Length: 113
Image (cartoon, rainbow, N blue to C red):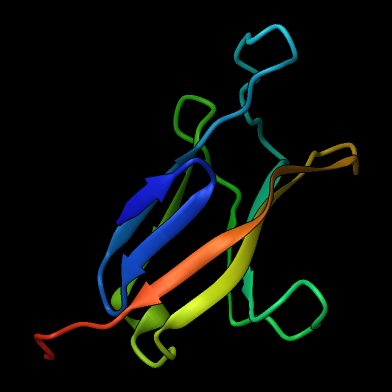
């Protein structure tokens, strides 16, 4: 997986781990807590309702969300650029997009299992 800024590029069918954390405006860590939900959502564009891939994390390690992408999650996807974002829904119901819509590129693989 290659991460450039907020843009992600990965090989279809690979296992990947994306660690997400938050900081306040001064740069201080703001850990995720019990009751929070962190969503990674991938779509063909921001203008469509259909989700190509969505992962939801509700258990956090030291206040960090670990988003696991399994081979089955991308194995059948077309090799192309998609768009993704990461959204936080706090236990109190407040919602914040913590990574704005960015590029999520699925690249082809050579070795198939």
